[in-house]
Each structure stands twice: as structure tokens, then as C-alpha cells.
Length: 76
Image 1 (cartoon, rainbow, N blue to C red):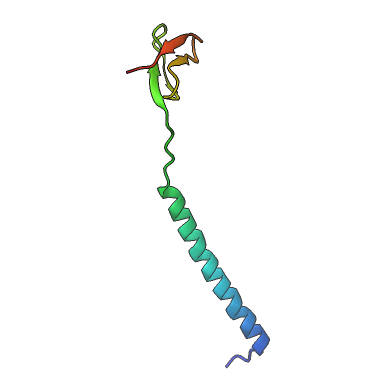
Image 2: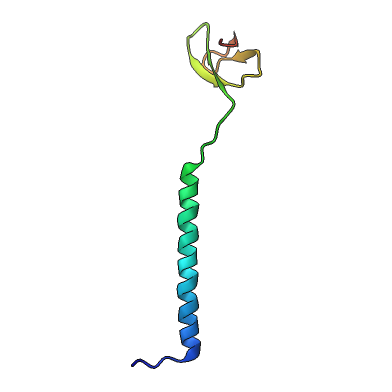
């Protein structure tokens, strides 16, 4: 049988326990990150002049096209 001092046995036990707990935490953290979806309150707008489609804040009545830099009404 292998002789092992008590202090070394406690260190090995604590090291294994901490490693297992860290692995469980890391797995649950990575699994929960994949499930989150961030929703942005944006709507599609289409430029009346260049027909470019872009996302803009729905609270604004007039939006500026990022491509041609002209003002457009809200898309309905």
C-alpha cells in the first residue's frame, strides 16, 4: 500500500474538489451564454431615394439614410 502523509492527502482531496467545482461552474456558465438572445428595439427602414434598407430606432419619425444621408419617413 502507498503511504501518504495526512497533509498531502488533504491537499490532493481539496485540489480535486476545487477542480470539479470549477469544471461544473464553467460548463454551466458556457451553457447559459449560448441561450441568451439580446433583442434590440429597432425597425427596418427603407430609403425612398436609394432603396437602401437599414435598421433605425422606431421612436424617430424621420430617419437619416446611412448610405445617401437623406431624411426618410418611417416605414409602415
